[in-house]
Length: 126
Image (cartoon, rainbow, N blue to C red):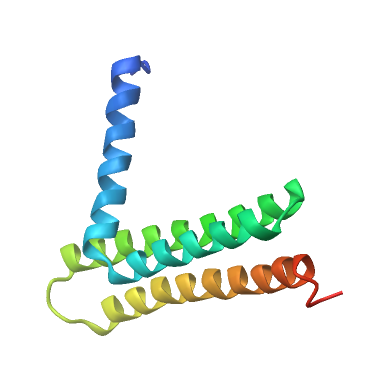
């Protein structure tokens, strides 16, 4: 029979710590994540300068978060693929390619959102 686990404050903090450790691993091991961090800083600085609408802020934050989630899942899938298939296999390569494609799609979507939001906010788009 399955043991029923209750969420205690201690377990919650422990789970939070695992998540922080995952973010540290992401930034330590993935050069693209460090580029995303620089881009996120630039986007937040531009947002602070040009955005007034809570809706625009929400869209920019969602688009930025979308890229981070995609990059994190991409890294997890790469690590898992390396674990289950340490030798090179075409299917393992396809898994990694698909995960990388997800990041590319997320980044392209974020770029489109950024062009629309910032273009409008800065008066480039009407």
